[in-house]
Length: 79
Image (cartoon, rainbow, N blue to C red):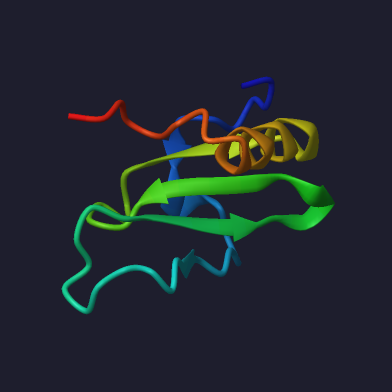
């Protein structure tokens, strides 16, 4: 992460509107939430610990992450 805000408490990202995937179950599960910040950065936090640390990605880092997801880079190996 190149952003100086990575690892900061999510509660310090004032005004952030956190979004959870529509794929999340009603009980929350093991989910992350994202917030699109002014200036284009994207923050990510663990939905189970909303006051915990947030990772903050630059727009280029976020685009690279989404590209990796689309390419299947994070798909676990078959069991």
